[in-house]
Length: 218
Image (cartoon, rainbow, N blue to C red; front, side, top):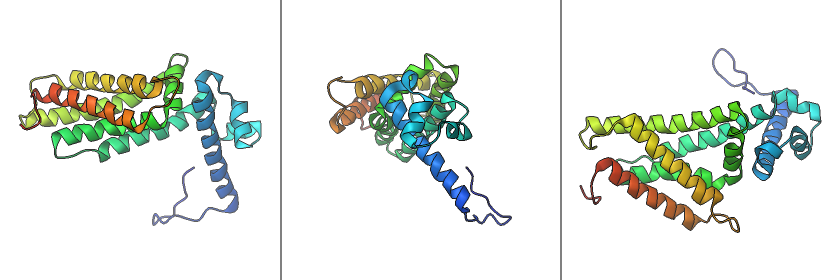
């Protein structure tokens, strides 16, 4: 719910009813995230979400159209984290830049394995959830393609087609993250060491595939 603003763009204080509505929505989003992460997309239900949020069943429909919409709002936070962390990882050093971008994506997978599982499950059952996945990939890949085009203009990237290369690198990164950090060992969750190893492996492959060198000194 957007905060009302006056003509001078100065935020107005919410009245008690508006504040309660904001708090209820936040509580329901947290509950939805927990239920999707614990049960997966198919087994999650409106009833389970409202029970976890300690709200009436009908209250759900004041904030979400249906279960798909609830998942979309939950997953928007995941997508935002990927975008923000990947941007924060950029560096003038090419290898460190690749490492930072990859870590931005993988760290979110590492922190939210249940939601990533729910996404993969949900996109097999729901066109709307599938589109969420496509949008997430398109955002990541388009930013990578733009970077490759910039590097080509500077004459530091070997001959390759930026869009196709970006799609291939994004797919490799996403599915390696899924299999290694989300699926991983079913008896124990992925550790920080697992995350670091995955980042290092992918960064090395990215760097040498894009820049066509056998070391990181040129």
